[in-house]
Length: 264
Image (cartoon, rainbow, N blue to C red; front, side, top):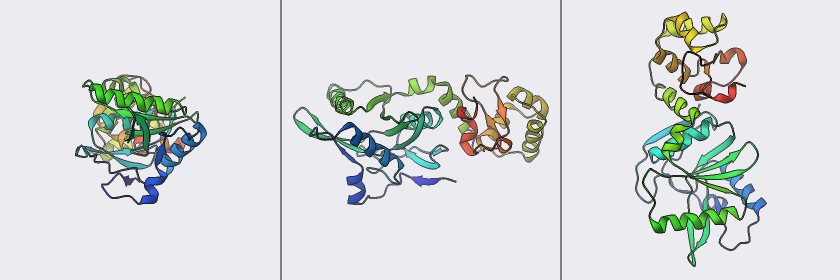
């Protein structure tokens, strides 16, 4: 289902040029900048090796239902941001390490590689920078401020996304709880019982537990593998959480079975 993107392989010169947004000379219009970012998100590949020059190891392969890809994350903060982009309804598409940005700072020409490029359902584009909980140094903060100002001049939002903020978003925390059970070995009898209950009209997670006798983690594991859908818009997940037969309603499976946009 997923194509792995972000393996540590080299990129062609043409690919790098197509993914480079030059804001250093002030000659790029807002329309040109946004169009370039949208194309980079849609294009296969990335602006540089996912394992960065700081030699951080890849810590996770994140399976995105929205993008139908597995993206490599080189920090826990980035993994949280990818999860957040995957479940937020306002995010239409995203790609990590999608664009190299050239900008001016302190009289010098600098290059930045924002962690995640995002296109919203309103047609806007954003860059998300994934930082841990530690405070940025003075020089690093100054560079990021220069980058943010350069992007603002072409109408692009630059966000610092920290793990504590990501975890407070109900969709992200709920999706993470489900995603962690994706490798759980399913019990066929429980899967059949869950589907029978859904066909008979059961519409909540609590009702599904009563009808099947399956423990809550087992039911969430079934959600993680795309058998039925669970509304993750509210937190915490509980008996009230709405469930739906995705095959009956024709929605996608996989991690998307836990996406809030399946429910109105």
